[in-house]
Length: 93
Image 1: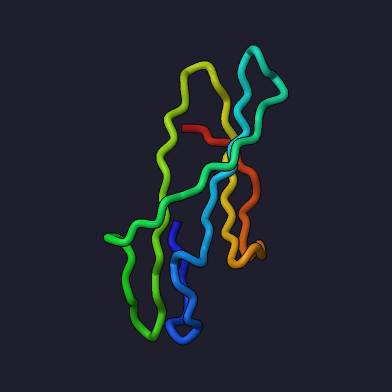
Image 2: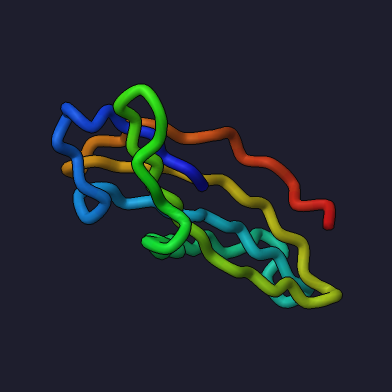
């Protein structure tokens, strides 16, 4: 996930929390279990871009098993304020 902020805002990557939420359904638990997985800041992939914009990159790796169904959603918080979240989508891969 790439988060873009204005350099003049003073927002540093350690003030941003990027998370992946997943709902894992199994045969033993058909209702599923929600898990919050923190995404890791990737300093090697982050950069100061054009026009005074900083790009902070966060990532996580998930390995689904054959029999499980997953739904994924992502969110970003800054100082305990939710500033962005996408909708829950089915992972069809």
